[in-house]
Image 1 (cartoon, rainbow, N blue to C red):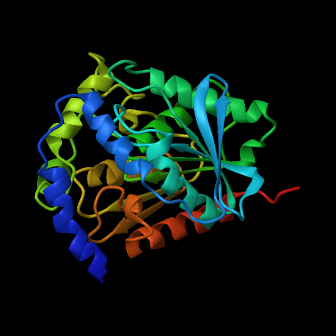
Image 2 (image 1 turned 90 degrees about the horizontal axis):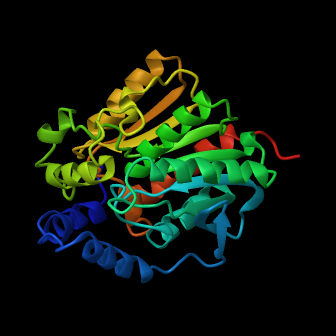
Length: 301
């Protein structure tokens, strides 16, 4: 049963996000999002430390109970064109508390200034930096939401192809895995989705790809060879236009022999986790992420 908060939040999303006048520019859209995120209040005991992960600006976000030898590398969403450490900080803090480990959020380069493969290069560089710092691959989890979820899969595919060690698991929250927008839910869930639109996805995809085929397997990892990937947790809502990006990815990954946990949330929208702690379903989903992460870490030594 949906919470009363989710029922009241939906019309607000439709009015203020889905039906809001489009920003005049990418820079203006970024400014609005960054301002809103800057007002977030982190849970008591959270620490934030600025760092450079190789060449990539980043932040360590740690809850009071976070271990320092276990890491979640967090790749934020925003359609490859928006968002940052700042916009991810609150969610990262909640995930840190739920998983009892440190979270490294990176400010990967954004399109259109830095189109594909800049974001992928930065994600790979950050992961390799963690290894260089002495973190064990079996103590690293890769997590991405929305565009960051697709980026996480592309990162895994690239690391595997280049002979790198892999993180022990990956968590994908409403991942955007098909920038070509071929999933049926792009149209069948258009009315149900309270804030994402096909137009917004198409514009972001074109800016990121910058002329490269949208079905390139490292732009849209739905079309990649997924064999050999570590276990995946995929969380997605029924009311997202990107629902089928998750369902098809799970089906393809399972066919390739990957251990996939697909968690479909009835009545939820795109990355509803953003709205925790006010949204009970967001709190519950983050709690399940924490439980999943804990079960896939090798014991600390």
